[in-house]
Length: 486
Ligand code: PEP
Ligand code: MN
Image 1 (spheres, protein in one colour):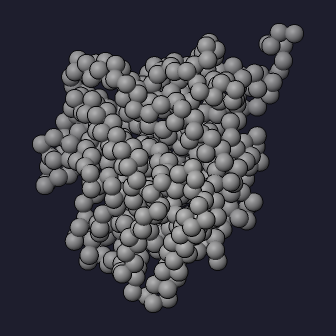
Image 2 (cartoon, rainbow, N blue to C red; image 1 turned 135 degrees about the vertical axis):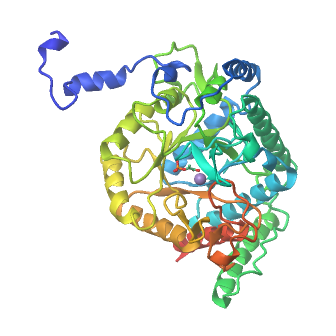
């Protein structure tokens, strides 16, 4: 029977079996197929010749991360999706090339490590660590221009595109190559620090809880630290570290995959180290030569809230790569889009492939999240996604004097509500996604450090969104741990 003899049904005009077939045999994909789609947040350069030169250079440079590492992360994220592990992802909103510096990198690694220990203790599960680092250089902006000193100026779009100083706001194609080298240098130092023992749990950690003035909290946090320290001491004493597992940890890198020219240039067809796994069966009709397409610029990439249009260029690019992928989900995500996104990005329903990064804002999460959970968990994607809470991006506001900030209480409120909603719905909140820095910045108000709005100007250094400082971030980890431990 020819397919035209079946009556069309539904709004798409296809029968259910035609739709199923279409889903199984999607359009051919290639690293450049995204260029035929609508590109949101597009970078339009004046000097196209220099762009080509930069992209051609990027194409020849070696991978920053490898398929073996990417597959290892995918295995860990599978555990997260199945409720057997927890995911901690954090770092700057906009990473600057200037952050590619020993102290800035080291303080962030140490903070993520400490937070992960607290979470392991709290959730009683292994923690997968992903840094928003070594490539988080491209920022989506709501407006192409902004007023600076009374003059309409191009918005700062992240170091990969232009510079923050007003005289560097023109898009500069040489920054594409700079981004690669800053990513590589950052990851090189992360790898070096880890292999040299920065995460050696045999060494005492500085928990610095002096800022916690509330005596009850001070006792609570100190007890958590003593408990962690005791556990580590016990493991050492009984010789539970014969394999040296306490000497180092895994730390993966991530960034928003916004600038597709850059992402495409680092996309390589490489041998898939997990041939026996389902991961090798690409959704893109590429010949089965034992190889798959990898984005070699980061282990994990996510699609932002402003670039996840189902028929847009970003979804087209991301549906072809083997890396685990995050998608930001918020108040503007319709239920039908949610399923369409999963079907486009993960047609083979690979467990842990997609992380749904939810960010509604504390006042909205209660009304919006349950519907999204029911749609996903009631579909063929039940138990296959990682649900991750980003309590930062729905809670940004401006002070009366126009400073962009977030309240610690709002951030924790969204997180707490998200935990409760997942519990009610029978789904598993697998992780958190935080904007943080290892430095003592004053960008978010509240927390035990007691930062007030008047304090924001003391050390406000973010060129994009406000981050939790090292004390606020660690406190957030204590609070999450407290939720599990009661
Ligand atoms: C971000 O993570 O910095 C960001 C821009 O988030 P969102 O896409 O959720 O707005
Ligand atoms: Mn941000």
